[in-house]
Amino acid sequence: MPKLAVFNSVSTDGYFSGPNDDISWTKEGADDPEWAQFVAGNAGSGGVLVFGRKTYDMMKSFWPTPQAMQMMPEVAKGMNESKKLVFSRTLDKADWTNTRLVKGDLVEELKRLKKESGPDMVILGSGSIVSQAAQNGLIDQYTMVVVPVVLGRGRTMFEGVRDKLALKLKESRAFRNGRTVQTYAPAR
Image (cartoon, rainbow, N blue to C red):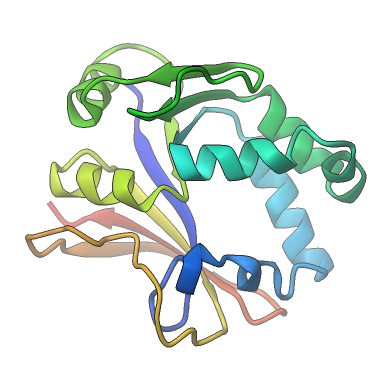
């Protein structure tokens, strides 16, 4: 049975996007070779990428471009070759390679996918998907890249979660660029 994970960058004060959905701050410190190696390794780890419409549109506008292939070839290759699910009520089609559009109920579809055999899934960005899946106990692992920046305001990926979500730390890794990667599992 596939697992469902989250992989998102967050500011030190807990936001995954700044005002006006700004995520430019997530690129700060990306020129660190140790960090670049970690990112490239993650991109080739396989699995199904899960997006909401906003994140899908943003990812699709960059990763299939020559610029992405030039800047980060390993990551671009992984992003483009991976299977992808995009949850949206407003998209009519999802034409990025290996993408399936899901217009149905998010929670029910994720429950169904987790019962089938298949590769693990990872939610990138997509705060509304994270909060709905978290609220319904569907997420098996949360990985948060804490970027050493304070935004002061923005959106958390847990907006809409009504009940306390207790987590236990599974792994932590610090990088020279000041980022830390924290991996948590639900404390069930």
